[in-house]
Image (cartoon, rainbow, N blue to C red; front, top):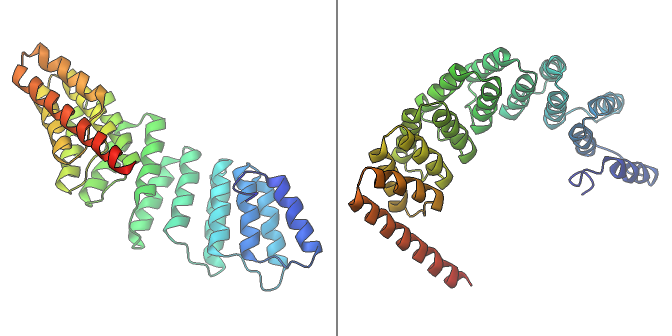
Length: 279
């Protein structure tokens, strides 16, 4: 409870009081304290706990302990120390899992060492670890902060090529990058990929895509995506509707305007009925 609330000092007082009462700390209790320190940026304090653990009998550092410390090293942007902890883990006979690799990757990205992050991604694949949304999102965020669009295209291509299904946060990141950099065609490609996989994209992804496509005068495709979301049972936002309606008016597509108005009325009615049933 103290850890989740961010009260590291209160956690320390509680812990030391428990020890005085006979509590014997184990790897789990050490890890809880380490995590609290790391989240407060007190990485050196967390490392001292690792030294304390080593001096105790039957209290060897676990995978969770090492992963927590690697994450903590990342918070203070000490990628070199994160790598040392990662290597030490293997030397201690603890096999790093995907989470440990992702923690190290996060440390590289925070330190803006994207080359090492990419190398680690290749290392994960060689070891047979499937890349997950944390892996992809971490590297994409790194390239986005660096303004490296080529790096983003590379990660995106790898993700799509492997058939991976991104979570909403990763989909939104990609959609914004594509549309804000004049490549709504790639946003449309991502949309079609998700639809083809049977995934219902988040309606805010439609906001971004509709705006991007309409600004590039690809209004017909924006209309198609709007209709597809409705057909999959999702209600588009008022923003997406207004943007699309405005561009359809410019093209004098009055039939399609009537259609999207009817779609919005139908989805709003369904939402209202669902709310009444839930009440």
